[in-house]
Length: 316
Image 1: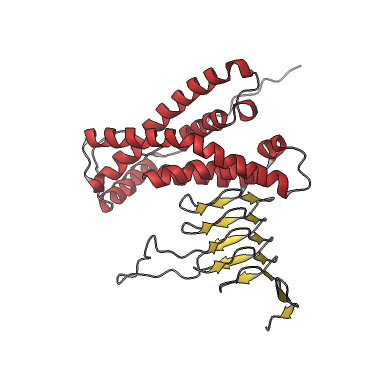
Image 2: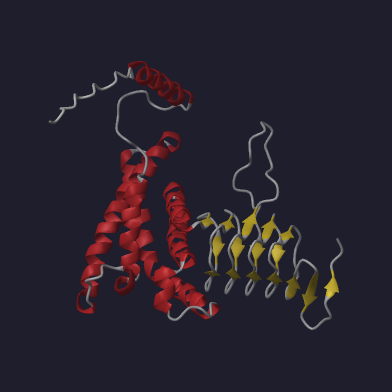
């Protein structure tokens, strides 16, 4: 004998009042921000679209390693051409959206927006060969800097630090061309995927290697020289945040460290403020550094060692 179960009626939820209140909150926010209350479409770039663009650009830069698995070398140029054209046209649409969004304040006409978007995307495209050359130095730095690495292909496919620096090289280029919101979105995509947070404004020289990587933070105005190596949980951050007469944070001031060539910064070290870490210096793990470090110094929790000198204890 079977017993038929009776359908359970759906609970009646009243969402009408919530929808109306959310509309009121949105309108209040838009009015306070000086935004149009007229109906219209989305005028902001899309993170999802950018993720697809980045996947295509990684394939364009490294087709036989980051491109489609079925790709063969005899059609490599064809794949690069078709994929690059697709990625650049998608990027052009995203740049237009950013410029339309900023046009509220810059008062750009539709013709000016289109001309500026084309200029930005063409300049970005022209920069890609140089970006590839720079990334080759980063890949080699990772291979030579990690005894566990068996090949350059392994570091390109597997290392989060290399993945993050690919995104950074692309984002930094867009940042310099004026597409700052897109650049920040690209940086945050890498942050979410790798745990490595590099502001697109940071200037990073060739041969850069982030080993392990999780928890690394590099601020907007940081400058990093050539052949620099850093480890997980390193922060290159700001020490103070000056404010203006109205109490608002001042934007864009140099406030992050300068890291010169051939510096090594070990895990957990925090370097704050507009300090300079001299060429060839080594910063030991878990240090808190707020003053300049001379070139060639090996700084640890217990002492610092200068090249050719007896170790000296550091007070307190």
